[in-house]
Length: 343
Image (tube, rainbow, N blue to C red):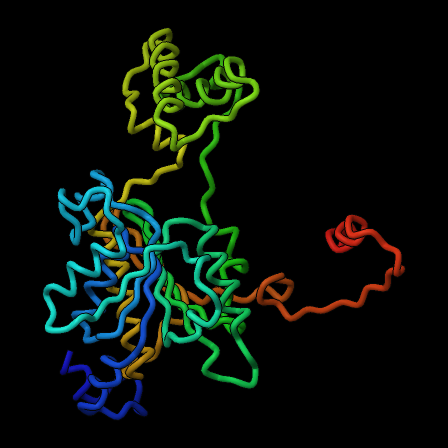
């Protein structure tokens, strides 16, 4: 990384090169959320970029299916916490410990924990977790304390597609401002899955949406319960055989019901590199930081596009729009909620 620190920047004339930049990066305290496919790549890139004070949070344990792309794990690690194993894998290759693991939910940490970091990099796999992070760091901002504004670098992948973005809480667009960009679970018309199924997914949906309530009217299926999933797989196969449909497997059942999207190692590598590149720029000032969203598509050739996501003035998380509502002292909470909802 020395060429970046010791050379002037053609894109930022105010950048002053010097060996002190390397010290600044090594001392920067960075938090990584998620130690899965994207998180492993982010951790590796951070260490190779000179960061030496990294914390990582992940609540998951290692599964056999992770090993094809989460390269910090081995077969002997199955069942072990991802955060702990990932940190050990990296620290064992370093002269000193540079990664500190936290095997817990991100919600388990309080605001004082999050305030200690200079940058947060998200390698999360759910929209709900991203929204929680966005809201939490917006609430940390104190107008009288500039250090309370902690930049969030968010990465996400979906098959051969990915994105990276930089969020300045209370300044740039938060996750709620761009919530309509998130893809939801794919659904199928009930008439199609009941009368004219054509795909394996139709049969799985039929078994879960139509048959399950008939057999178990007082119980919802649990996607983490293998007995429930095998039952749906069995009924899906029976239904598929009536229409000559093939291709149903247990992994497909889980993929449909859990909305699992295939993870591609190369996509994770590209997006992780983009996220860490922004972290280096934020800490060193060697180049302008992404403003503020980068889209990557790698299924048909290679394509990327950068644009600025704008704040929504009426965003209920980061918006500053205010209103005055007059109510009676005796108003019920439910009535107040109705009034606020209508506003």
